[in-house]
Image 1: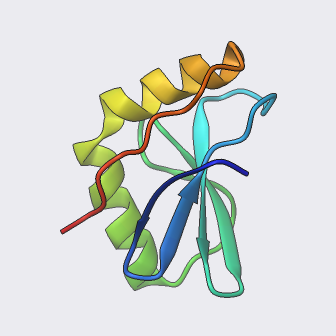
Image 2: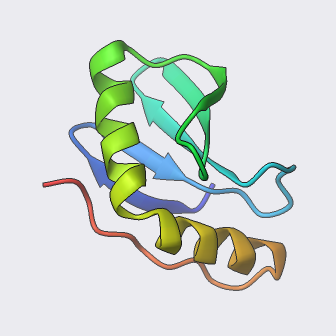
Length: 86
């Protein structure tokens, strides 16, 4: 599970060979969720409301970088770290 960012106890990861649509994974304690990149929508899993709001805000700020990492993951290239939410 390549970690691409971490903030406020939330780990953001993206897997190689993951399925469409383009998405990333957010892990917060015992919670895990898959989040669509294009609209920051919850695809599956769950996060507490506050954690989801932080992840959504972060995804909005870094959408182009997330899409670039999705492309890199499809090519099995090294994923780039993305700045955390301040």
